[in-house]
Image: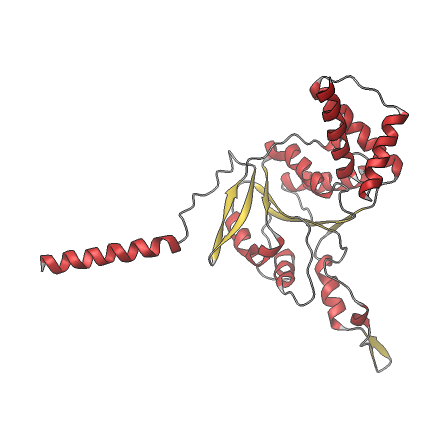
Length: 294
């Protein structure tokens, strides 16, 4: 019997050794007193929240020329962290105009008041109910942030998003809001064919149901904020701000000049885009070159 038991235990150990690599690792819960942000990772049939090391160095004052959007989103976030009614938010519009940066700046502004940020990839939105379940009942306020949110025709994940936002018995709890950025106002592509199958029934027009289904998704967001391409004046204002900020950190003396302005304009022209990201990249390049030459 001892020999049989020993053989059985050896086989069990060999089996466990083969199975352990296939099992998900044990994950410790996020300590929200130490971490202000986390990212959702899918693993097997479930997933986990991974704490992120983030720098809270971007302030609301660093975002130039989007005063109305900044004030509306800041007010909504203040309501949220104060335990007052607040809305899910869709930030849509031109790329590089400050949508994601505004959310990062709000985290820096309100982290001390209990605000926490959860990043979730667009491809993992089917896991959104699991994420919300983990956050429900926590003492902190959580913004679930999905960057560059959009859906292609035929994808069904947006229906999960609709249910969590509003319209089902299991919608998000009071300590969870969804902030999403997108280049599309309605998040899904709208094609001419969507409107080709209109019918006349008893004198009433009934549009294709697909159109209503698509528009209903963006309607779940209570607050829409629009971001538009920068004018040249706006772009140059942002360039001046970032050069001034980076130069001050490095102790570099500088002056705005016509030559510098032309360099900044050429930089944007070469990239075919005037936006905040482009302005920041030019400022880093310009300050770095001058520091290197000194």
